Length: 305
Image (cartoon, helix red, strand yellow):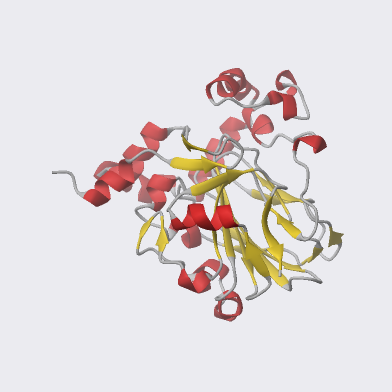
């Protein structure tokens, strides 16, 4: 008999697409290797001795930045159904795979939702909770967030504990730039050291704590209407660096680019002060059912209270 937890860990990754209104199965880049690393004894030895260490991701990132790596781009576009019509540059113009990975989109490809709505910070698969302290089932039942570890501060954790939390997971096939969910003034990002493990769902089903053990960058966004927002950019295997592109202390508009991730899957978490926003019904419903909601950056996920 196969243990139910094992079945859950190895089951397909299903998400709900807001635009097609259908459940879809995720195409996972390097799925076989990830399942070996996180699902076998030998793989876990390799994980702790090599893969989660920064040097592995840096070397992988260097390879993805070589001209030779650009040969992968046409097959990647074909195999993962990348819509090149919305990409700012033509596929032939990219000098490396990483150059394509951090591609920019045409402005009209991602319209920003109007007020009083807040904008999703990234393309990806999203989960949302109205009360961060009540999260007790992420990917599998019983897993909750360690907010002090995630934020690197017990004081910040207490401040945001009963506020809303948005978890946005970016797959390697996604547009990998992330944006501000609201207008305001952002402080300089604070770097929080850690490992570089994968944040694929079947990895997080085993250990959610990779979200606060991995390397992270924390940005506090001060807004006029919804108080402060804590934005945490989380690295993962293959993500050699997180690049912040905004200017600290300068005003930003909702939907302005905050930064980008280099090669690999990544995650953005946004925390809000209590009583400031009300999350969308479809986001809360899918999260309650244990499913992620796929939607684009700029689309709405909540409204100001």
